[in-house]
Length: 101
Image 1 (cartoon, rainbow, N blue to C red):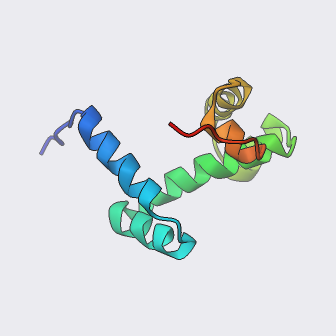
Image 2: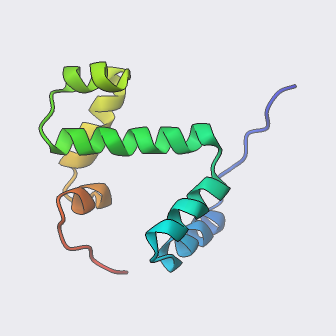
Image 3: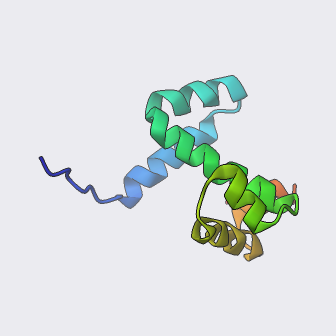
């Protein structure tokens, strides 16, 4: 059976963002993510975050590829995210002040 491809509707994305913003407790956030995401999805998101953390720490791309067993393409994407001065991930990882909208 072919899997249906769903469109990511802006209103649904905004509702999810609002739900995430409403949680200030780390344990509640972890439970929410575990409820919402499959184990594989949660592992993928966690891997992406770990990749960004390692890049910020100055670990070489080849070392990250070896340690996390991922392609250099994924690492290059993470590197581009961190080079973007407007990146929220960058602001969080470098502990820069976040602007509220």
